[in-house]
Image 1 (cartoon, rainbow, N blue to C red):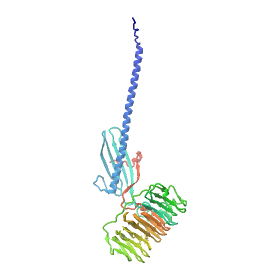
Image 2 (cartoon, rainbow, N blue to C red):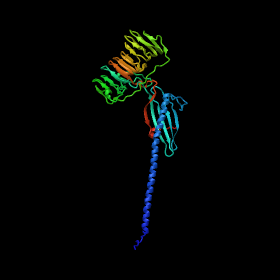
Image 3 (cartoon, one colour):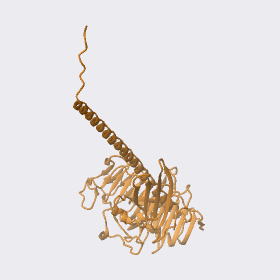
Image 4 (tube, helix red, strand yellow):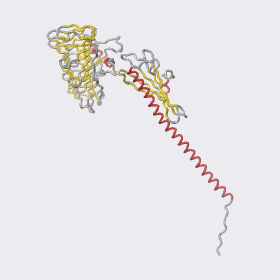
Length: 457
């Protein structure tokens, strides 16, 4: 009969060692679990702050959009702003609140706008959003925006389709007739004030710019994806002063150019002019008039005395036809604005404008894309003016100086004209909305301190 071996009981010391090892393992597991839980909680909090950091950015941008909408709609006091409408030296402010997120988290945004003084002004918007969390410091985003009026004349020559230079000695440069932006100092063009900012651009993706042998002292941009759409002849060039003939300066040409060339509408309420068809020597004084046509030949001339606006709305006849030795002449200090729906041919002696600033003569083509409007302007000596006709084929003829800015469906520069873009036209008040010219997030305490007292409301 077999018997079991005697059972050996571990000594008390061995039992204690095993217990200690087990306790150590339990402690390690407990510490690991605690660390894991802490890590998980911190990761969750970090994920929450990252999520709400994005929410804070969305809030501050919403405040910016509200301010821009208010500027462009010209909102008045009583619509959620304090001290609106803004004027010189004043500010307006508002707070948008009541944004509730999950887990007792709320958001708000404070918005401040600076004064708006009109032509040439660059108002600012400062927005400060806050996300208040149940634990931890609030999340804030600060953004500073600078605005300016969008201009139809931000470049010298802009075409939906093509721009073509046909002369062998044509050139493009720029100057600023109003360097202070307030009309206090008016500077006529001369070679001594010329700048190499004579910008030109074509919008359509299939558009072309045929520089040929012209000198473009400035920039050229096309709507397509290749600079091969900019053609330069052996004697032509695009770039800053000093650019070699036959070359495109790589820093002065660009692709993917865009511009919003909206149709323009003639003003209403004009006084009917008598006779409705002008065909003899005539002087028109200040006023807004509607008529059918201006057709001058021989030595007849139309003299503009004062500030005159002419509205020609017929699309079945040529709105303006100047031939022979006839001309349109502006007196010193006078201005002429023409809204024309039909064809315009200012030939003969052309347009004589003795005033220093091109904005003193404005031609607005109101023809739609279905009309195929044709505009031809000739000048003797110096042609001074601006033209905006996004659905017209525009031809500028001259061998002298052409000063201003021109926008059309297509543009042809015939002859050896020297075109000078007036940089002050970028600030011309054409009732365009405000747009963003500068966007900056204020991330440091130093950046924010400049507005801290203003944003404490």
